[in-house]
Image (cartoon, rainbow, N blue to C red):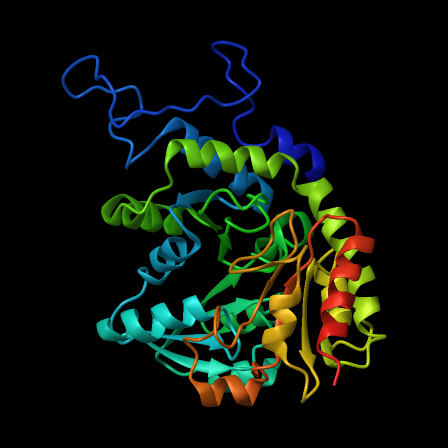
Length: 381
């Protein structure tokens, strides 16, 4: 089945008992057991719920994995994956990954003896040289948030396999519609499903897909034990959002290309981070491991231009946290999504104060561009 059809018919397709085309919302906490020691396959909704299970099967189908798991947020999903590791283990992470991921590793898991090493994962030699006896996993985002660094997933997975490590990929920016890390050798895929998978800024959720029975058993134990599961109604909303992923992503990609080309003509812009430009580092790798360049753009305003006034001058584009909704969203990484990263690291990698991250929505590009143009005119020197 092609991915466009799988988005709609994957996982559990409707309800066989009633013929309903949508999976019902099983809004229940517990289940009647017919007799002692016997159940219907469900006992308690923290352990298993039919609506959540339908979503978990759907994301597993889409990513081509062994099993999927749904959590109450992207960070709950990430936390569950990090809980696979033990005291003394070390994880390699990118130098500009999402600030929330860095925060939970640096401020929470470090307390349990799990350490990390920061590397430029777009440079395979740097990744290879950073592997030591304590490293148990390589965690990558590609493209990274917010600088759009491209990492060769297959190349990293090869290094990981040579050293008996796990490869973990945050696939939030690309979604399984554009990029399938497990087919490239990854062991675990994470999504903040709040973003493109949900797509309508109305549900907070996280998803994980694993490539083996062993990982599935371990992660289900963690999911059930720690309890950060996604609620049935939120699972229903996410299934509904995923059904339109293909048409939304196609529009996001088209709009982002048009907006990026417009930004490249403006004298106020110092630098643009957009994988769709041939000049973008990793453009070629992105073209081979994904079937599109996504809907995310980051750009740096030249010195002397007031980035705060620019953000406050936007009217159509929403200034706020998150990304991947149908509406265009803009944020200030240094003070919002990546404030948890140390200042020195932010400056070193390029998360400077005048860096803006834009999630291009599916509105008319004429209106998006007009809004940006009007805001730029207001900050002219």
